[in-house]
Image 1 (cartoon, rainbow, N blue to C red):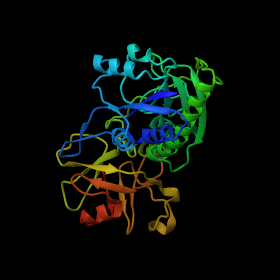
Image 2 (image 1 turned 135 degrees about the vertical axis):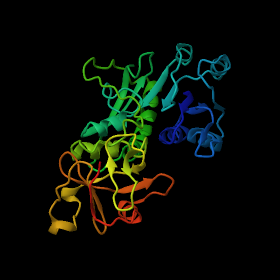
Image 3 (image 1 turned 180 degrees about the vertical axis):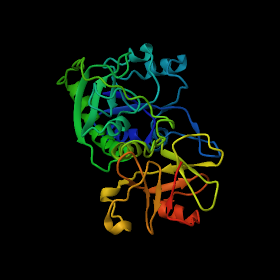
Image 4 (image 1 turned 45 degrees about the vertical axis):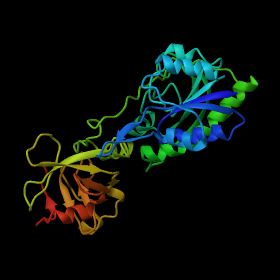
Length: 335
């Protein structure tokens, strides 16, 4: 079939590579416009735009996919089908109507579970044991179109959303090619999604990724894994003195400084050095600085911090960060 692929982030790259190596013809690639990146706000192409250029594909970058020039060019290309992986913009009906076989989306959940922008993060956040990927025909309603195919993938205990998405993007690319092969061969039929089991996965924001140390340890563990690498878990600590520091559960303190967090380890299995191997008793937000580790109290058992990143500094092990505070006492009361 003659294809126009739509995608934007790195998670879409395996699909584009798989399509380029398939029996189908990629006539063009649609991706989001160049965007400012980093502190310097220098304009950068999307990962898909860079790969499309490398592979020699025509690249279309409408600000909105309802723009007349874009629809005219799409009609001129006359694709049989338009596969999509994480494009990042809603497609108007005028675009959906152009390819005879429609737009086929690769979504990183087993629909109807976790419809929306962040299915992988929400699957980890809610403690799902298994997730997967789905190919379906795009309709006007969000992620509600009929399904062509699915695959499943276990969620491992230490998976971050980045880890899980990496695996799903590779397996999902193979699923997309199989789906397009079957559409061309006439051996697959799109099946309506069930009306029960629907859950919604909106994009996570920095407000969603702030840690509340009063929560149970296992929920904090899920939250930080779900928010790694994006939007990134964080907390605040009281940097007002050289002898005390505090991880805050309330925003707005004058001396509070933000601390970015990577995944933690539950203290019961973290290899504690202090207390003859016993799990210390820490109130939510309390810190215990050991020789090679930093522990934080939660609503249940403590957690051992992994890597952290203070504002304006590099990512580092939590123990290195704590040593840099020049604290006079290893057990600190947090507010």
